[in-house]
Image 1 (spheres, rainbow, N blue to C red):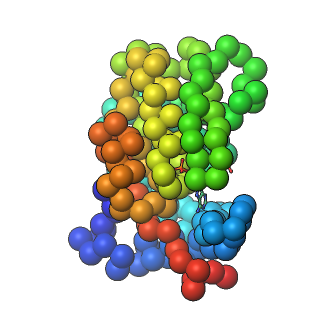
Image 2 (image 1 turned 90 degrees about the horizontal axis):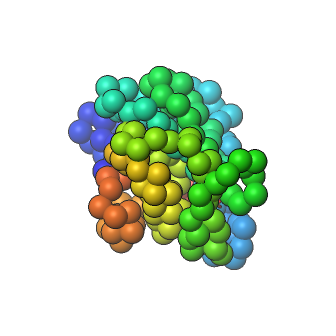
Image 3 (image 1 turned 180 degrees about the vertical axis):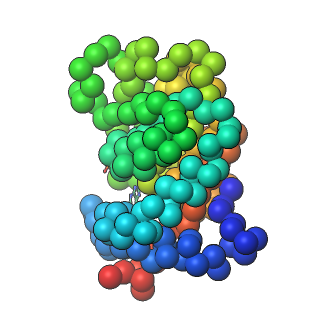
Length: 192
Ligand SMILES: O=P(O)(O)OC[C@H]1O[C@H](OP(=O)(O)OP(=O)(O)O)[C@H](O)[C@@H]1O
Ligand SMILES: Nc1ncnc2[nH]cnc12
């Protein structure tokens, strides 16, 4: 699901400001990848706050008790959203970052393979969770995050990202879970 404020996708000034604050870095971290750099969005406090506010407005009355954020950039948006809706924040980390006992899920990326880990006991059975990341590309990361949370008995209500393609294949990888996206990836002609 794409954000459609005022019912007109792509023409909402807030969403346009968010999109324009994201820098595109061609060929990072390898040839052919148009890297969507949200650090420039973080430099624009109005656009950053507007981004968090859209998610907070969407999830505040949905009985969500857990916001799970994907390392690294999902931590930035996820922790802010958790504070905004009054939920706990659970980091889903890359291997060997968490000190306690963990559950793990491997996944395939656009540029390699990786693994996500979560502390055992961070989430309880039947808790209602949203999963937050900066970007969805293939959906492999969110798919692993869903498996991780469901292995703990949690109910994944929705996945949400700032950036993503309105691509059905990604949705299929998300086990039928709703995916909420604010803006499409920016193209090379828009790079700073
Ligand atoms: O939909 P996918 O194809 O799985 O890709 C999306 C993931 O890729 C990026 O993270 P990355 O793996 O580069 O890790 P980082 O945040 O630690 O840089 C991004 O922040 C997402 O987590
Ligand atoms: N194009 C991209 N920009 C930023 N993060 C990504 N993760 C996977 N693909 C990406």
